[in-house]
Length: 224
Image (cartoon, rainbow, N blue to C red; front, side):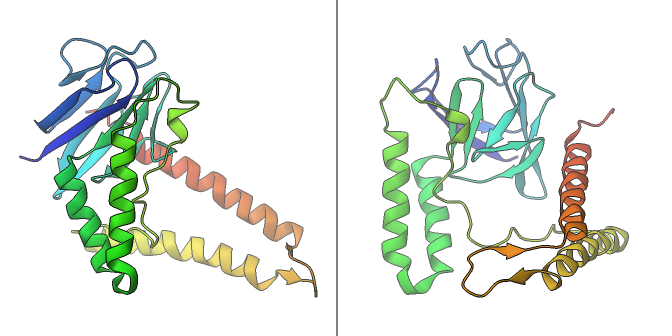
């Protein structure tokens, strides 16, 4: 059974630490949640964190005001040590200092040229965030983790052959739309802007809309 540590950085419960809470974890303002927060902008049952395939998955439980992780609206998302979860007026930091230091070391190991300095910089930034004592935060939902990866996320693990084929079809479709748009792009000499043909621009907007629909479908809680 996986456990998770959450530290409240901002909000009515600022300073509280929920250490090594066993998953699954529910967060909300109602009694009966694994973590109950005194925030009127949080839904009764707002967010669920559960283990799956050795990862911790966050699922928004159709909350009224939504959930953001690292500044992005989510329905479902893998969370990692150092991530920032904002719900209502509250901002939560995932992981203990030790957990986050381990992730920093792993990130630094993949970037050897400036590994030591980069690791120290990330560690210092997160410690400053977790020790922040300001009563005023303009918008906690926009705060992003300094540990956001610079590379694309890894592909899902343990896919069946059919799931792998379906994922390949989806990625090939996305690649095709972007390829057609980029091949038709025009960059004028001396200009800093790239021009797209209107049909290609419309295709990219349609792709964005389709991806938004897919993300919502994936994130909707199952009927069972």
